[in-house]
Length: 234
Image 1 (cartoon, rainbow, N blue to C red):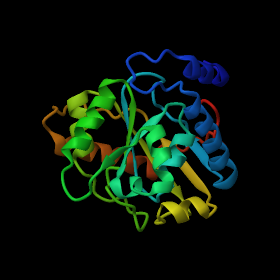
Image 2: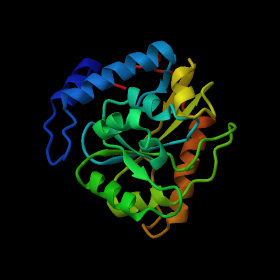
Image 3: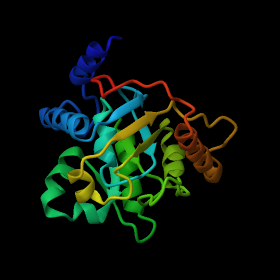
Image 4: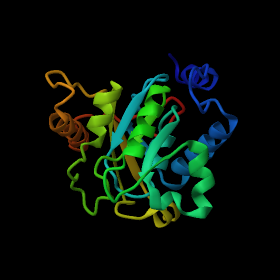
């Protein structure tokens, strides 16, 4: 489907059982602003387009380079991504309205947050795309950190497909405010759905490792065909 038609299909698609309609005009306005911000100010280049399906539940996982990462990934996706994010960011009064509008899911870093897990599973059941940074914290170097098993648990319980993405750029190791204010030169590479063939749902360690390997492969340049600047269908 041509890029413009794909984007129109996204805008006009029926909302189904979604509790928050992805066709909400506020979300499209925010998406437009975010794309301009990402393209013009942060020079975001998509090396390989986003592979998320236009409808239905999906989990997008990415390495975590800075507080800017959700903006970068969202700018390259036609789907609304509901991010799981650390609760301390949500507690910033100036940003809470934005986080509420896009439907972020707050996670307590001080242990296993089962309430956040239940909310994430409910979002997937309602057909949303869920965004997760499995490292659990911002990288301080180019090394991809070990992944927490929570993403594998969500994938196993929901049956939703998992799609990897690799983010790189000069924004690395900056917190949200500085990452948003300082101009950067970022790239993002999206991968196909991860194949869990040969692993049963109880093998969370194997699933976690396979998810991490998929992002490591993207980082190593396994997929390098550049898609150029951010486009509407990405």
